[in-house]
Image 1 (tube, one colour):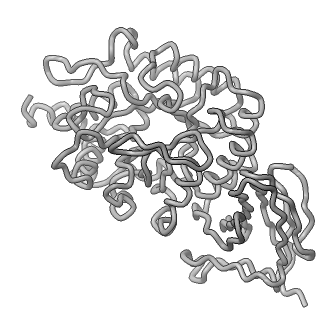
Image 2 (image 1 turned 120 degrees about the horizontal axis):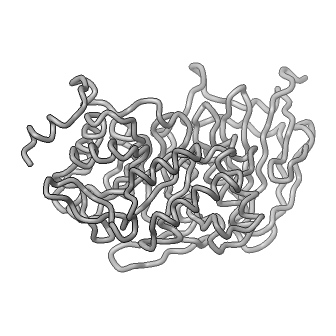
Image 3 (image 1 turned 180 degrees about the vertical axis):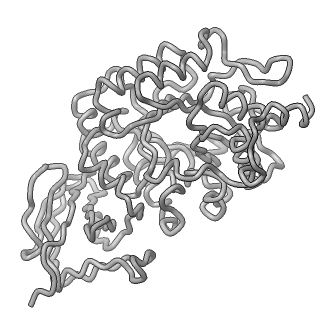
Length: 411
């Protein structure tokens, strides 16, 4: 099909629209679920409908999760005009009917494609068909596109993602664009203009601290991915997020590790895209994924990513500026033994190293100000900053606090 024919199928859009992403779709980090971590290619429309049902019944929708994202392997072949079709065996009712069902639940539907000729799973990619695919997604009612980077030899990553951004804009339906090229081409330097989030690493795997070597690429555990975020926080913010990949909460790690994993993603202002089987998740997993106070840290309107303030042996202390001059504080025990931690507020000068607030760098001012301390996971007060904080942190675990200023100019 010639380009002129494809363009004739587009709704009327201004030329300016072809040069911009859809603004304002991800002012806080996107929250949802993706099929890949648990199901891989073993997906069909019945599964996706059931997951949508469970997202509602579990309280996840009410906690803020919006997107049901179908990953790789939903594709069938292209029709005689080059338009992509769903696998008729797996999705006999079609993607439009599935989108209507998901929307009827108060949720949004996401889909997957690849900038190359084939997806990572060997299905038809979007290279050379970007505008046709964007039209098809708009017809179906798609709200989110995860756009991968397999089979992209000799392609420019900024160019390829710009093409899909322009195609989505031309199709006219607002779609969150998730850039998934694994951080290989430093998307934090150019991704803000192209999409709403960009992967900063290779794929996650459900372990605390490991690398799984697949030959030409590796999967990474939670701490390995955390360490890969170093130096990237200044590039992220509302409508343009660093994405350390989907979550592994509920996929076989310990409860301490799951809680720490969720806390780390909250502090990183990372997209909260669950990757577990919602049909069979435990009560503890459900409580972690729907914890309103921890989610509020992630969804805070400032959109500022946390920074590592101090390291002592296996313990790290992180701070995240929040709106209304509040802060989140995370004490992370990376090690295999319980750790005692003492933090004397009066002797700590916490200043954000990268982000100025209202022209001045965010500063906690503990020496001259007093804060209430709320333990988020314990759901109880932990006193104030008048006294030193002394806690014991289990191995592979965190303490997570919200700090609310109550007085200034203490003498």
